[in-house]
Length: 300
Image 1 (cartoon, helix red, strand yellow):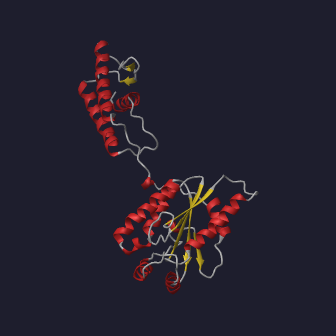
Image 2 (tube, one colour):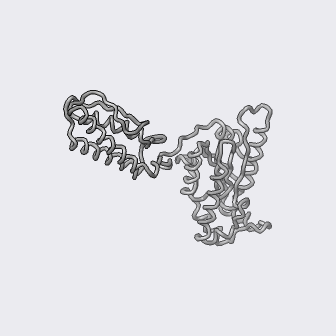
Image 3 (tube, helix red, strand yellow):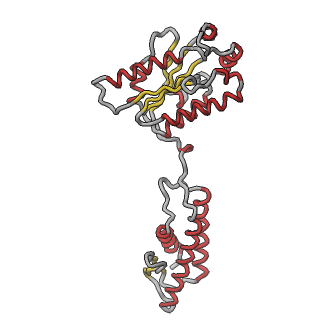
């Protein structure tokens, strides 16, 4: 249904804002006047995944932690969920990665930027008594590396900025974004390309070779003069029809067309096809395609 990215400096109050937002959304979903789909609100954070603050002390430890967060996010994405990711999300490339995943699931998206000054973050971090404080040098490093969201880029928009002076989040605007906002289609670059079955190459080669032999057999049976539409008996259940010119078609012509046909379709099989939807590589489909190819390329 919707995906909400929380972003902000460490110890800027993101978790408090995420809880405020969760409360607002749940109240609206339970309101008797709400007549939309049944939805649940899920919040994923470093704490819910037991990711320690110490992973940010070392980039080598931070990378697998971020991968764990992304995996958890993908598992929770769905049409029945409003998902809130309560993490720093300070790298714009990571925000873009989650944005693409949300588009794959056809979710509405928005970003909530929780704003606080460096000094306030340092003060709030040093006053924490819950054992979740960052090491001072780690906090300083994260503050310097933070990549601020921008409403000018598609993966951060719509962007809602919540300064530390605001008592609450802009619930009305966020509710409208997650329930009425535009659902962007999946990114073409991230869509899976339909793959051919493992026996597609064998079927392609065998069917086209059998059709060449069947056309030559039909000509031989008619004394070399066929012309018009003929049905090729490839098997008891497979009898494709092909229209031949009113002259004798030579074996070399058919073999040349067969090589061209196989070459074109072999590339589609091995490299992937650009055709949308499922591609039919059955004997019947290949026979029909080759028949059309022969008809279109044989000279009268």
